[in-house]
Each structure stands twice: as C-alpha cells, then as structure tokens.
Length: 555
Image (cartoon, rainbow, N blue to C red):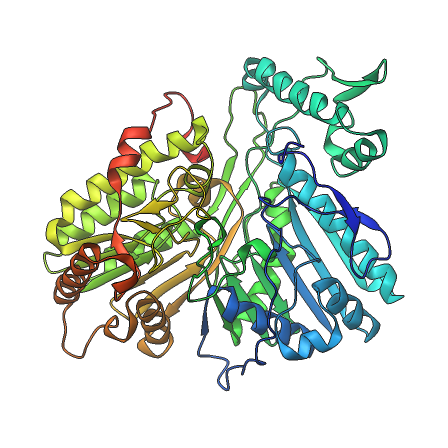
C-alpha cells in the first residue's frame, strides 16, 4: 500500500475501537520500546527558562506539567498525536499513551483546549489524514473520560487561500493529484477505503464514485491552502509556558545520544518558563485566529509572532497578506546587535533577507564570529527522493549559505551533526550519510547573540516561517536567562569542551571549534569527540533548482 495514503488497521490501545496505524516510515510510527524516565524537576525560579534539549528531556517535562495542571491547559501544535507513548514514571502510572493521560485529567476536572493544524487535503493528503486521525483519537479520549464537554478541539486550517488565477493555472496539476489519490483509494478493500475517506474530509467534495471506483471531479476547482499554523506551545493554568520547535508524536522522540537510524533522529529545543510570558501566551492564543481572519493585530508582550491572513481580493496572488512579522524583525535585530558571537540552530537557512542581515552584521563588526548548525539535508531530500519544492529549497539555501560564508570568511563555521558511528544499512535515504556517518536531523529554531540575547521559537530561517505561517516564540535577555541555553546547546554537540571559556572571544571560540571539527572529520566515526562536521554545501548546489516565478516563501 502506498505510504502516502494509508495505514493497516489495528486496535488502538485505550480507545476500545479500531483505528488507523501508520506505516513504518510514517512520522508517528513507534518502533522503540520505551523505558520509563525519571520524573523531571521543574524550575524553582519561573523567571529563569529551562532549556530542554531533544524530546527525551522535553516530553517528561511536558507530561509533568500536564499532570500538575489544576484548571486548564491550552495547546496549539502542528502535530499532536494522542497515541504518543508516555515517558515519565508518574505519567506511566496513569497509562501508556497520551490518550490515557488526557482521559485521566479530564476525569479529574481539568479543561483542555487543543488546536491541531489542518493541511491542504490535496497537496499534503497524508498530513491532512494525520490531523483527523488525531482529532478522532482525542474525541475518543473525551468520551472515555466521561466528560467530553471539558475537551475543546480545533482542527485549524489557515484561512489564506491561493487566488483564482493561480488556481486555474494549477488546475491540471491539482486534478492529477486528486486522480492519483482516487486511484490509490480505489485499490483498497471497501472497508479500508471507507476508513481512509473518513480521515480525509477535505476530499469529499472533489472525489466521487463511479462504477465501484473513485474518480476525481474536474469541477469545481479546489481551493488551495499554502500557509499553515506551525507554532508549538502549551500553557498550563497561569503558571507555565512550554514553547519552541517540538511537536508531539513518536517520530519526534529522540535522545541526546542520537543512537537511532538517521531517518529516526530528531534534534529539537524547547523552553519551559513562567512569569509574564504565560499571560502573554494566553493573549496570543486568544487572538491569533482573529488576526488570521483579518482583524487588527494586538500586542502580546513577550510572545513574538508571525501571522498572515487571506488577501481580499486575492485574484492574482498565491501569497497571504502579511499581518505580523515580529519574529522576522527580532531575528534581524538580534543579528545586528551581535558583537562577539552569533550562535544559530535552524532547520532551514533560506530567507535571503535574513542572510543579508547576517552579511551586514559580519561587515559592520570585524570581530564577530558565527556558528550555525543545520541538518546536512532537508528531511524531504535526506530520507526520500527530493521533490521539486525540496530542490528549490536547496537552491535558496545554497545561495544564502554562500553569501554568509563569503562575508564572514574564517570567522564562520557552518556545521551539520552526524552520529559517532559508521553508517549502515539501517540508515536509509539518498542523503542520510555524511563523512561515513549517519546524519542527525536538526529541527531546532534558536538564535543567540553574545550570551545576553536569544530567540527560541517555532520559526525557521526561511520565508515561510518569517512571513506566511503562524509562528510563536520568545526572546530572552540577560546572561542569567541566556547562558544556560547556550551552554546546554554547545555542550550537547561538543561535550564539555564546547561552551565558551572565560575570556575567550567569539573568534577564538570559532577557531577552537574549527580545530576540533577538522580533527573529527579526519577520524573514523567511532573515535570522534563531538557530533559536528562541516556542512555539505556541494550537494545543495548540485541538486538545487531555481523556480522563477514561484514565491520563495513557499519553501
């Protein structure tokens, strides 16, 4: 069966009904037997953010905050799978998966509000199905609790739509995608076909049945949705805010050891913090959908956002109307203020305006150093055959990285992580290996300047995150808040030798790291001291393709 479409059926644990189980390569498939992790300690001082590196640190904290919540929890995630396994000792006393934890807390009187991103049902039908699989599971959790009225669910489709003229021009390609989906569904047994259609409500008006087979309707021309809600945050009562780049499912669970096959690694960074940011997060959750609908933006204090809305009229345009670009402005401001060292972890570096900001910072400050950590290849090119949009992203990133390298010269290190072992047959993908080792996939979104200014958010350094999608993050100020984050990130990649030493300048740190990285690249993987290696720019140049006329923010 095509993995884009479907999943064999099984009995979902805790639901008391048959549900869909995703295939082995699907993002939420769990192949690992989890050992219960110790219950984490929450910060004594809520004003000092707690950095959480990888899901092994983040998920137990997420579970404890949920367990300790008394009145209400509000969440907005791109992916939230209620069948994700629990990890902390206390949570596993309640059950094995988040379904059990949610049902337990609903019984105890907790009110839970969850918004999960919905996706274009034609362009990304598998993600659309994943959302509705999660919604159905959460509805079952509410019913199992006996108090479904305490659970508020929102499958959130971004309202921005492609204009009429581009939709007409893309009609044949859209119809071909519908035709392909209809053919795949038609090949299923009738009961499985009905199951797959239930998980794809957005296809109901565009696929019909003729002579026992499903066929794509040529009319009406479907709406196309390019923007999405990409934020990942949870607010627990008025006490804690959990925010960053990490969604919830088993695909995203990884450990600081990254000892899995390359295609199952997932490096991410999340923050837990209290203080005034919690009330600001409530204001953001109250207002972001209204702003998406065209309302005048309202300030949300410490919560920095990217928000867009549907254009009216939008006859000729593919892009949404830009409403709030606080994260874009904050990144440029942070880079402009750097004097010693800028440290960045990001999934993509594709926005040319952001690249220009770094170039200007390099020219204005001759002593400024730069360390940037990126995945060796985007997920849709590293572990699968790259589609044309992924190749366009490679093209943009190669141009941006080239400009940054030329501006900084030997003051910059552009790096990618790889596991300290030799790549084997279980590391699957055309670009899943580098320097004889399996890559570690980077999904973190952080930027730090001079150990006194930092951004942690859901936003990548690409046009989509800076201008189109719904994103949320926070800015940290002062050494007390920033230093634990930077040291935790540097120590994660380079061990105890990673953090900046007293009296060491940013340029000296870059030079020291360069020596360590060069030494590691000359060693066999098993003898390497750190996890970082030179970023492989050549494949991006070789495989990247320009697409004139296509908005850069699409990728």
